[in-house]
Amino acid sequence: MVEMHGWVTIRASYRDTEDDSIDQVVAEINKGFQEINHINPELKWMNGEVFFQYSLYTNHWSDDCKELLKLFELISEKAEGSYGLLYILNDESDSDYNYFVVYRLARGKLEKALDSFLSPFVPVVEDDSNLK
Image 1 (cartoon, rainbow, N blue to C red):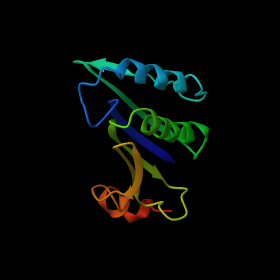
Image 2 (image 1 turned 45 degrees about the vertical axis):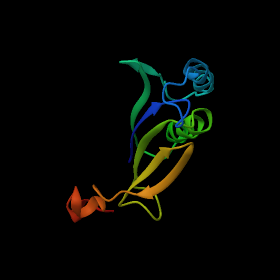
Image 3 (image 1 turned 90 degrees about the vertical axis):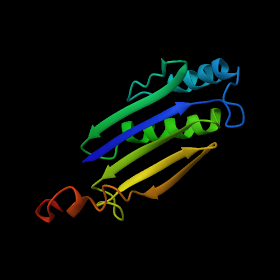
């Protein structure tokens, strides 16, 4: 089972949060979204801010999982001021099967770390009888 939850606040720059180029950045990200085949991403606006959020549950690490991670990479490249988190629990991972892996997006960089709040999944969330 693979569980993924992510959100990103889209900003063109971390230097100037009132950057007028946000419409251009949104257009570039939406263009990249059109190349996605297995999920249906959508940018949304609320109170003058643009954001992306998505959750995914699937049986195996598959193309939809890869595409969601690819979207975070795309946003990190096109909108360096964006920030957000992508949490992934993948029980098929050889090394991280009992941990949420967290991708942190900030200042144009997407960095991987192990979660410390819900990990190790067993015993923090489930009993050890559920561990593979």
